[in-house]
Each structure stands twice: as structure tokens, then as C-alpha cells.
Length: 477
Ligand code: MN
Image (cartoon, rainbow, N blue to C red; front, side):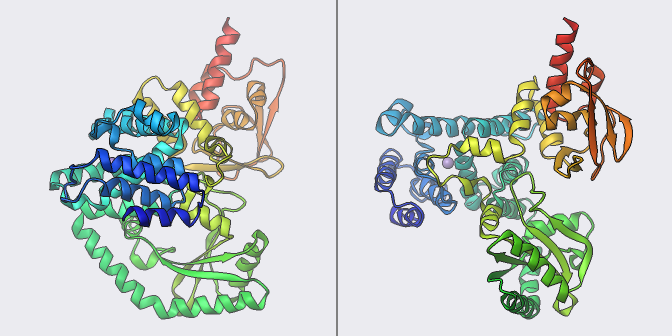
């Protein structure tokens, strides 16, 4: 990576001259202030901020983020000050770099309290400004890529904290490419023997299945073209860590239903469903392995249709059917949404990311970091259920959620006046725990006192719990 490589990588998606000039200036500033410093590898230090900016350029980051990345270690490691950054660039850039520096100063270790406190700081960074977290993730990715230069103890320590703290956040933000690479790198340092053994297996699988998958790819491609659906298809074999995780759960290699995938891109949503039907007309589907993430997107924005079929040579092959926009979000996650400088990233996040409001609510209500992490693990990272309104709208809730959680998720007013619920046609008390695919109608009465403290303690969402407790306090006074 050199400055010119970075510039040409940025210019693929951003030709604004003022932006490019600012990026060059940031590079010169970082180069000047890091002069004489070396990485553990012996290379000049500037290689690192350049590489971090390069990773973000691949995500098509905006100029502020690229500039922040180039300068991200200057406050901590050089004589440059926050005031100078604000003067030379902008108060916003100074804030970004300062934000990254604060995270750097966190004392990472694996005691429970420290993991909790660090995760809280990182996650609250998402609420503050998502760019800080993205720079930090890119920084961590480059450090993981160059981890071989550190001592074996440091390798294990850094890999475990990456696994504990950074991988879940990359996943939450839908940064699939970064998440997969981080996971593979962690496994490589935490269990090298396992990593190299699986890596060899993946290479062998790729060679073995090549002919069958290409035959299937070309058959499907032709079938779609015959039916007037232009398409592009790519082959993907599951990541080393992905396979490792499934095998840890007791799966055998040939039982992993998404070990092999065809990534099919078509122009429109309607064509996604037509493609799905056409594939099933030729290849037998595996029962229960069809998922509609278009109607029901994942928390991290992911959308697409998945169906696993018995492909050529009776190999299980998962088909992932998406539009170009869905495909972009699948690999970039939130980073797919920042190219428009007029769009305030946090507004996009607030409206699109289902975990954004819950995160704010958990942060407001959790007095200590352990509680915060426990709530995040339960409500945001934990298992989900999907339940329906009587109109068929889908509502996502943490597993174990009650009708009260559901009511507040629909509307605060409905939560405050809930009396009971009708679940799958049967009248039930408001504290009833909901299950996947329940159809739920909330009954309300404006003269009711609403949910009580007992309800609050059974709520699984922080939003509902906070509002119920506030209501109880109001009713008591
Ligand atoms: Mn760094």
C-alpha cells in the first residue's frame, strides 16, 4: 500500500478534488509526525495507518473516515494535539481521531469486568459516531493481519479479545467480509493446528466440487436467461472458521447445508422469487432449508432468499438469491450506506438497524457494565423469535419476550394500556411468553393502570422494561 494506491482506490468511488486534497494532506501530516517510528515488523510506521485507510477505502468509506484512519494513531503516539487537528482539518476530524484514541486507551484484558466495560465503550461508540467504530475495526483487522510479528503470548491475548469484542460488533454491523477475515485470523493464532488442517480441507473441497458446481452454475444461468432473467452467479465455499464452528456443534463436513453456495444476483426483487421457483423446478429442495430474508431481514440489514437443494452429484448446495443492492449490503453491512455525504449516518442507522434503539435503551437503563453486557447479549446478540401482527407484519423480539414487550415494540401507547393479548386466537394474560411464529393481537383499555413491576421484571427488552418502570413510578406518585 502506498499513498498513490490508496488515492486510486478512493477515486474509484469518489472523485471530489477537495476530498482527495484533504486525504493527501492527512497522509503528509501522519507521515511527518510518525517519522522515525517503526512497526514490530521493522517497516516504517506510516505503513499501518495507510493500510487501515486502504481497508476502509475498500468499504467505500467517505473522505472524513479515510482522513481519520490516516491520522488515527497520531494523538496517542506523536506530538500532534487535538487542537492542531481541529485547526488543520476540522473539529469533526479531531473528534473522530480522539474517539479512536479513547478506545485505544481501554485496557483490554479478559477479566469479565474489562470485557464488559470495553464492549460498552465500543457499542456506545456506535451511538456516538459509527465512523469511530469502523476505523477501529479496520485498525484491528490490520493488526490481526500482521500479528505474526508479536510474541506468542500477545498473539493469543489479542486474538481472544478480537473474538470476544470485535467479531460480535462486526457481525452486528453486517460487515461480513471483515468479520469472516477476523474470525479466520483469530482461529489461526488460537488453534493453529486446527486452522491449517481445515484450511487444507477447504482447498481440497474446492478442487473436488469444482466441476459439479460449474455445471450447476451454468445450468441455472441458462435457465434464468431462457426465462428473461439476466443474472450473475458466483461460487462460494464456507470460510474456515464457519466450518470450524459448525463442526464444533457436532456437524460432519458433508452435513453442513451451506458448505457450498451459489451467489446469484438478479436485477429485481420479483426476479429473486422467480429464480427461487425456477431452481426448485430443476433441483430438489432440502425441506426446511428455505429462508426468506427479503420479507424478514436479519438484524444486521442482511436481505436475500436462501434455499438449499440437492445439486449436481447430489451435493448439497445453498443458493443465495439477491439483487445488487442486497448483495452489496450482504458484504458491506452499514458501510453500504455512507456514500451520500448529505445523509447523516446515524439517521440511516437509526431507521435501518433494528438494534439501534434497543442499544440506546439498554445503555440508559444499565447501571453497571456487567448488566449492560448481559442485556446486550440477551436482547441484541442472543436468539430471536419472529412473531406476527394480525395483519402479518413481522416483529422481531429476543427469545423469551412477553406480550408486553410486543406491545411496546408496536407503540408506546399500546404498551402503556395493555390489558391482555390474543395469541393464536386464544385469550392470554399480558405476561405470557411468546413463541416463534405466534400471531399476536394486543387488547388495551385506556382506563387500565397498565403493566406493573411484575411485568417489568419479565420483560426481555430494555425499552419495555424502562417504560414500564417509569409508568409504575408515575402511578405510585
Ligand atoms: Mn492503529
